[in-house]
Image (cartoon, rainbow, N blue to C red; front, side):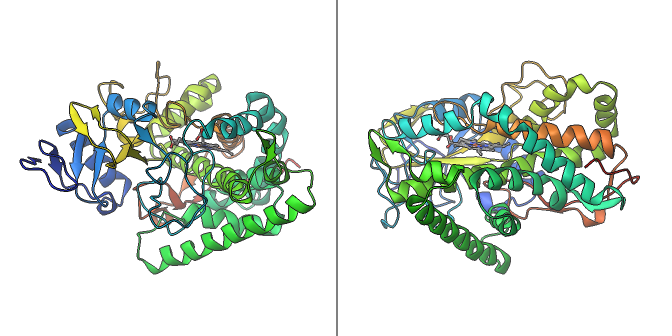
Length: 425
Ligand code: HEM
């Protein structure tokens, strides 16, 4: 770490300067170690990497940055109200730019415009609405396990952890079943490969196809609504007027991208963890009542969303430094969740950890609205795996981590073997 004496165009004088290129730490262990080191030396620091940004890594600073929506804005541009796509000064919300102009509504809006759109999702994803979706969650977990249970082997990512969130969310949105696999893969893989690699480019192209499908469906259901959530979002009235086509596609994009990948990441991590730590698996088998606290600990240890971006709109102090208007911030959920000051024995998986105020779902006004649905899907997958294939083993040689752990983490492949069981449906 050095201190910038004179100040440059981007980096304010007096700022602690570090080399911290998110994209170079591209395995979970490397990435976690880099965050640990940064947090212990400089929890709020400037780095010229990643386009020049403040990197925020301690629990307290991360929580403060997420909460201070007045100074640290989510909108793509510095202006308060983002225009619908295309403007050259648009800055993507995530730490790593993806090649897209598709908006995420409400995540990329700021108050006051954000508020009615948040209320729309709050209604759709309330505990009561999630309870009504529970039979579908149970059905898809049961069916996908039935499909493989007699064979004694499968890839648990393909079969279950990506299959289930994809089926639940895309059925809810009303997309045709033959497209679920391709849509799911586009969102899982959009940021899991190193930028610039041919595979990353392939999935960015796939993502553009997914956005095109969203635009087509929104166009169709704005003319002829069906009984599904895409039709509801596409025709919603905000302040007495039907929302714009751009914002309607932005809401469907939000539901799809927020819904299909994140739960995949944490549930895959949980199955890998239980393979490598049989004592934790045994404890859950012996004491199933611990499942809810285990879910929170998996979310703390393996948060799917690792970083989010913000833009400073007024000079503001954070962690003792002055952040200036137009600076960018990269806020790290994964680093906050491993901060020893907030979580004693932070590197240990403590199945009944309490309190456990992790920030896997963010904190403050944009805190995740899909948390109830995510927990419901995760819990059903964990429960049925522990009941039906409790002795599963991961075939380590086939295990494949994402090659990019900057914005999202996860596993692309996790082959397993187990004692065959019987179908339920
Ligand atoms: C384990 C699973 C999930 C994780 C870890 C997660 C994480 C997050 C995080 C960190 C944010 C805050 C972003 C920010 O502050 O900029 C967020 C926002 C959001 N998430 Fe999730 N998410 C998950 C699942 C879901 C699901 C299943 C849905 C819906 C189907 C969903 C819908 C949303 C929405 C609508 C917002 C925006 C809220 C707002 O801007 O007011 N999420 N999520």
